[in-house]
Length: 225
Length: 299
Image (cartoon, rainbow over all chains, first blue to last red; front, top):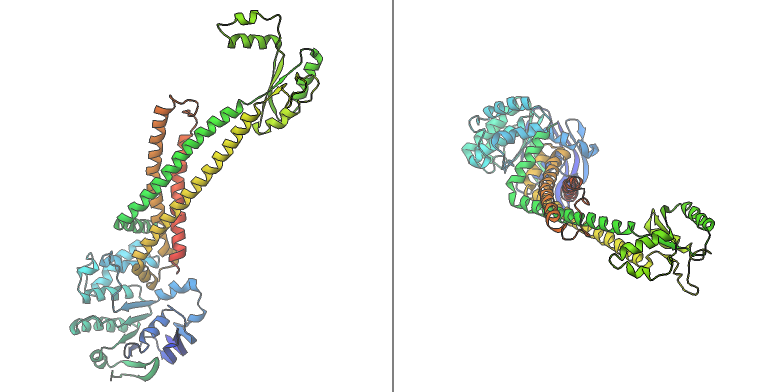
């Protein structure tokens, strides 16, 4: 699903984002990406989304070489990746249903399909009764559920979460984790960057640890350490 | 495909940032109103000037000693000139008759004259008044033209030389300065709309970033902004068109009667002008928002 082949990213001036990273993640895997702030987790994710290009190496996502991808096809690449962020990134002027619907509108889905799918997915994340609330009327945990719903409503083959529980209290975090776990069970590859030690230790999934832009550990059923 | 969606997005943004939108709308309103007003004045002046210019004519006076054959030959010669629009022959008798009319009440002055001293003449109007001097000069040395010997320029040909020169110069200056003024206003409007859309883009930077992340294509992101700019243009221009209609109405009502030589009610094609103002505002909106998108929404 994801393949990093000798990938390096050097920011100007000579600040290292990633250094010679080789990673292969299979379809349907659940993977944690751990490390301190500035260890390269975000660089990893932004490279996946092709927000910028690597300085060296090649990245393949779902069999497509990102370096050879034309800019005009970039939106279609992103539709194939659901994104969840620490700060939720919801549209503040749109209600919950509209926020989720936006991801469908972008793909040109007919209105009838949108009307059917949005309540369905919101039911799934447990927000069926808050469809018409604005994001700032919701708790942080609820906002993150909306964001997960938006990321998953297109049924992407890959779901990327950048510290999705970073702003949440432990109990709420567990809820979000369960949601991501359920999504993974449907066959979606999930990649989650985090420094939530407890969560990683509890889940016992693959852990890739980064430090100063390099992979220092990569083990199945790993611990945060 | 989802025009309704884009349209409602644009309208939401317009209403949400209503202070900025109002500023842009008023800007379009003012500049399109001034442009419309300028056009009204332009049409009126143009009307007055072309009226004046069409009255410019060449008068060729003919010696009393010329024979009828010579006079007729000159007439044919004039008629054969491609620049000539119309020729009218004023006979001695008609010249006297005209003088008599212009002296109404004092006709007895003419009784003191012995016979008819007035020369016959040709009155020539041209297709293009710009050529008046050139055409007039052809008659200067004509053998049957009634020149007083030794006078330069010859006095047998009258064509309002200086007047026509001045009218032509004023026309040119008026046209050029009008065009410059309108160009400046148009530029100002485009820049202001572009700036408003730029602010709108900045206000929604986060949204645009999110749109990109969920895989919106460039045009999916752009359309609402374009529609917002065009809508701003249309609203402002429609208001301006109404104001122009009102202004024209008052002008016709109050000024035309007092200064009929400068303004005439029929000079302004007001319906077309209204359409022009609205179309112009729409175009301003489109160009302004496109400009802003190109510079501030690099995707």
